[in-house]
Length: 253
Image 1 (tube, rainbow, N blue to C red):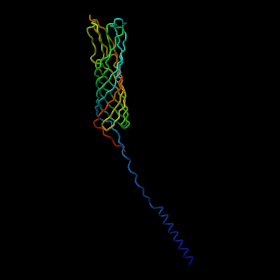
Image 2 (cartoon, rainbow, N blue to C red):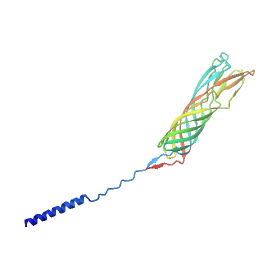
Image 3 (cartoon, rainbow, N blue to C red):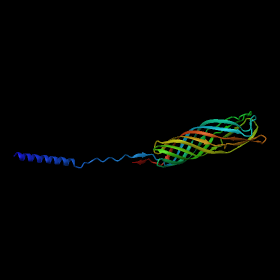
Image 4 (cartoon, rainbow, N blue to C red):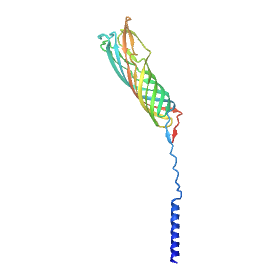
């Protein structure tokens, strides 16, 4: 009888051991991970228009080549520094490939850089300097985008209304011949930030160089010509806003 009980107990133990092993070997099910969330990527591609405004600081050297000033030697230089505001608008197109943004932009407006100073060694009340006027430029842009922030450099051709100025209170001159406009170059850099899918704001620094394109000739009362060579550089800092047509946000997973 005891032997039968022992055998029965052994059989029950084997049964429970087998069930436990089978339970350990049963397939286990895991919850599927959710798909990654989409990340909105700012798209800079598209045409845009905008407005800008800021400050301008001009530096010019006026060389009295033929000694128009009564007490001057030929080639005497008068330096003039002025400052003022600028305001205008821009239009352009951007094309984005990965992080790189290529573009072309044209802008123009009004540059308030007028100002004069007495001509060195003159005793006739003659003054030389700069006039305010309109300006424009066409530039290429190369940028690096960090989503909605764009760092860029730019450069190209610039044009300015004849910015030279000459005046005297004496009757010793009868006229002045000058270029109707001045050609030069512009280079600079900026930061633009897209605060909505279509609107962006920027801050930009530009350096304008016009060389000696402001040269002119003064004719005195008896018809004698006196040449003046005048160069010009202008530094500007401006802020602006752009509206871009198209260019929706792109989802990346």
